[in-house]
Length: 112
Image 1 (spheres, rainbow, N blue to C red):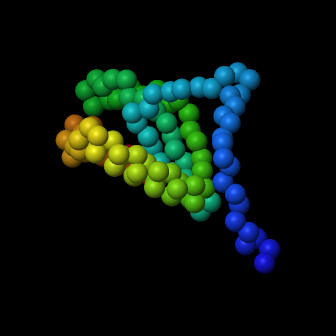
Image 2: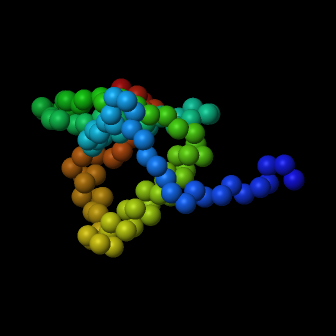
């Protein structure tokens, strides 16, 4: 049946960097947005607060399909589980009490 063949998993993966080199950023703040076709991640770095004003560097964004985002979620859950087994539980309630909850773009705009 067409399309029913399983694709072989490659025995090795060769990573290739773009001609300008790979980039690396630090991210401690993300805003999420959705459309019917994709999920958008705005990647930012909170660098300071003065009163009730936060200063954030917006490094950029990336977009992926909902299917890929769900696969990413599974990979992150597995990685966090491994991290907590090795280093102890992440106390998210304590972090949220200090930094506030993760919000989507729609939630952030609704607060304005």
